[in-house]
Picture (cartoon, rainbow, N blue to C red):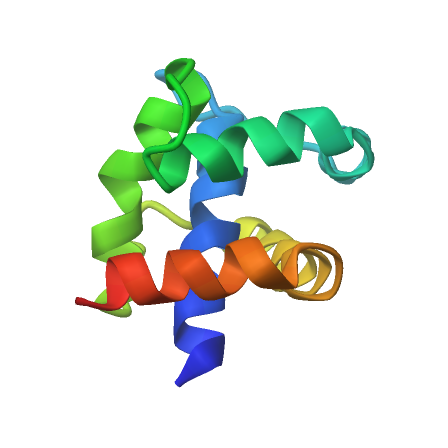
Length: 107
């Protein structure tokens, strides 16, 4: 069950990097974003309603409920792989925020 919720954040983070035409996000760009702890913390705070949202955070909040329901129709196979990487990263590195997101969006 927790994996399902993890996919939410992962899909959203990956999808948020995409422009309106949804160009592919490179693995390098994803690595850079995941290594930017301030960026990740900003997006997590936005998702939790603890801070203002930038455009990426707004998209995250829009897609999160969809992904929580197990549907990411916009996700490509590459994005799905990237989602799994992001999922693991957030669970390992931000466990308290992850637990809050699961509680908030599971309802």
